[in-house]
Length: 114
Image 1 (cartoon, helix red, strand yellow):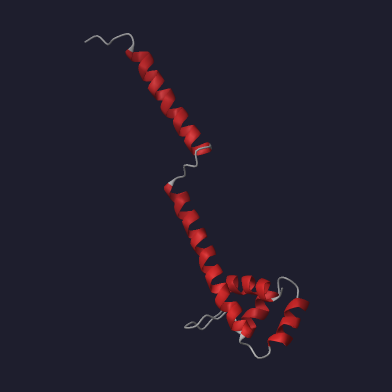
Image 2 (image 1 turned 180 degrees about the horizontal axis):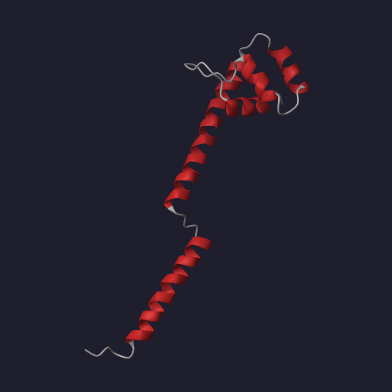
């Protein structure tokens, strides 16, 4: 069987086109692999959960009878100590849990210490 002359350049064109579409799609088109998509979804869900729990932490801080003194201590503390202060006060401990969440404590310290 004899192959037509136009078949070879046509197959080269298809191969080059597929490579070009792949390169353009992954570099500029926003395409990602499944692993990258899972990683992005995990990071986004973690960020959303911390944001939601931070509002509970702020609410718990407002119910603290010693809020004024603790906010003064919070403002006087260095940035890396603020999360520890919030955890020590129990504001980052969510209802139904026994321990505070470090990420929530840091985000809460930023909102309470304003």
